[in-house]
Amino acid sequence: MNKLSESMILQGQAGALACLVDYPDPQLLSQQHSGWAFICHPHPLFGGTMDNKVVQTLARAYVGCGWRVLRFNFRGVGGSEGVHDGGVGEAADLLSIINQIAPKGPISIAGFSFGAFVASHAVEKLHAQGRSKAGEELGELRKIILVGTATTRFDVRPIPAELQNHTLVIHGEQDDTVPLSSVMQWAEPQVLPVTVIPAVGHFFHGQLPLLKSLVIRHLTAQIQN
Image 1 (tube, rainbow, N blue to C red):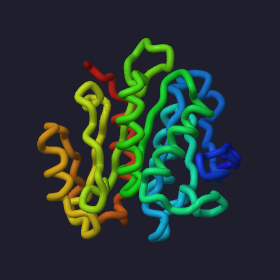
Image 2: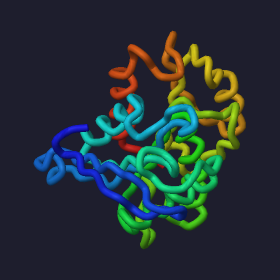
Image 3: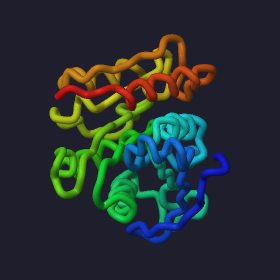
Image 4: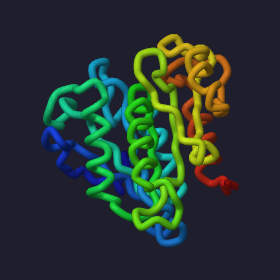
């Protein structure tokens, strides 16, 4: 993505995974390093990769806020070994990567479309392990960002109540891949706010700068529990 990006290979549960780490400017990193962010890409059977434009937009927002970012290709995509596992294996791979890169300290998880579904399962597991509690040995899950969440096709897990103030859900009003009504039905029982961008579709064409600004605002907000 930029001169401060680094390719690496990490081990997932089905083999090697192709990863890319995006680093903040060194001066910014020394001033306000916030932790590690892990971003999940859209559906691999429909062309989704870690180079997706929405995923890259999320990465730029994190980097600009002082986070180290790790993107990776799901199994079977772009140099990653294994075969598509419907989200189960992909969530396990995400947790494996988190344990390798950031076993302690603050982390953030984000996902776009199918990646948001995978991210929700990882959040649920980390919360159950106590990783989402500030002050625990494993650190704190500080921010969660779900974009174009694929609620019509997958079992997106609810966000634990303790983490809802730390979560940003963004959706396009005219999303014809995942209708807004489906995301609202998922969010309603949780009383989880959804930020809607008017007149935009699933891939946020023409509104990626706005998407980036909304993410930055969430990352820099002081959360009150």
